[in-house]
Amino acid sequence: DADVTQTPRNRITKTGKRIMLECSQTKGHDRMYWYRQDPGLGLRLIYYSFDVKDINKGEISDGYSVSRQAQAKFSLSLESAIPNQTALYFCATSDFGLRQGRYTQYFGPGTRLTVL
Amino acid sequence: QKEVEQNSGPLSVPEGAIASLNCTYSDRGSQSFFWYRQYSGKSPELIMSIYSNGDKEDGRFTAQLNKASQYVSLLIRDSQPSDSATYLCAVLYSGGGADGLTFGKGTHLIIQP
Image (cartoon, rainbow over all chains, first blue to last red; front, side):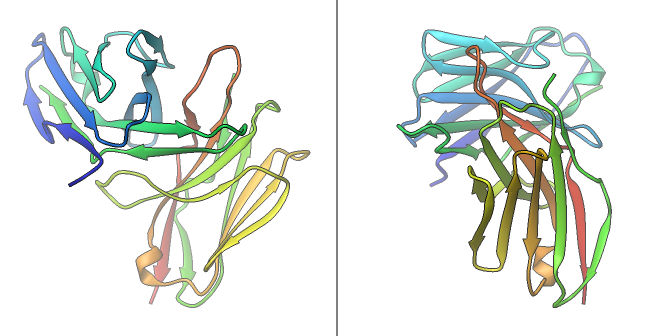
């Protein structure tokens, strides 16, 4: 079984609809992230969470919200989807070693979202 | 502002040759550097991490870091068609509570059989 899973894997929706993307992990990591990827723009950080009570905005949080329901679950919501939110969305988790800089980030398989 | 710059390519390299991928970053406080490989439509996969100046080798891959020049590179020796992918340079800047990787836009590498 995959360590980081995302549901749904593909979603087509209409402008103005509310959408939730879910992420679950079995790696036992405290840190979880949501990124979006657009052609020519690379990966950009939307939100990140250090633990259940610690949620932070990333580079492009406008139009998005998140919920950390448990250590293993981190959901991304689009309250009112718009076409320019069409993108590939990735969830990721990370460990952070006791020594500075020993860090690895693991990505889920991605959710392809299309907003019409 | 944290920025990571890569040449988008495509970079075309003959099979068996050395592929050289380059990356520069803007934040001098950055401590950790990563190379991810991403096949089309798939998630990024970590292939190399480097934290200290100099070279780090892992199989056919060598990462090079020069913090003074704010420059990171990835060399792929004996390039194979399966190495054809987009390579993402990523930098971790942890400061002031910030976290998460800053990614370059990626270099599209094509290995020609």
